[in-house]
Length: 232
Image 1 (cartoon, helix red, strand yellow):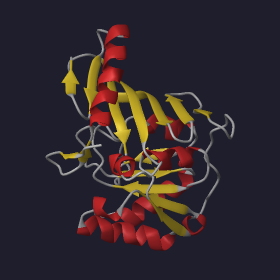
Image 2: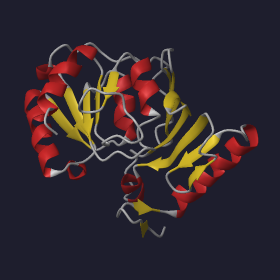
Image 3: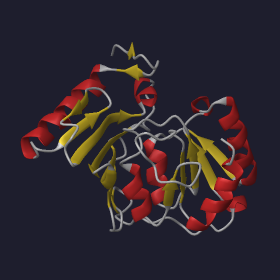
């Protein structure tokens, strides 16, 4: 499969574009009045109150190198606020669906229960991040403080890591450089599983934000994690 490089130097393939077009066609047929915003084809009906946000392959680097950690993200925004989120992991057959104000639903070979685990101390926490290259030098220094406070750190995962946090297998995720299509689907899923997800200042994620994301499974971890990330 041929791989092209976009203006931001991220890879894209015909699979990314074809998958997004397929989703756009289904959504346009069923919700013609809704807006659409996708990583590959941009915006349609930007003034619509309800807008679908699509990331056809979250983790294209994993996809093109044969690693089975990529997924598909679909979100529905109401006036810019995520009210519905889906992570689909096609290789493992797992799917998370979050709806604002409702428990996160999980379907997969291991059962249908989603829920973050109790972890009241960073010293006992499993920390995850997709890759260190997503940080600036200043951000990496802040991340290093958080990393030193946690029990272990694992790299890789893209959106799949947030699904694992919702299953109680990861406790903290700190990342940067996320795009407006990367995080909306994650918000209802993490919060519906009992966790919290904010930027590095503790504010709600926003399309015009910094791209910094902090997710914790146990809400008591949010403040100490934010304190270690302060200044970036």
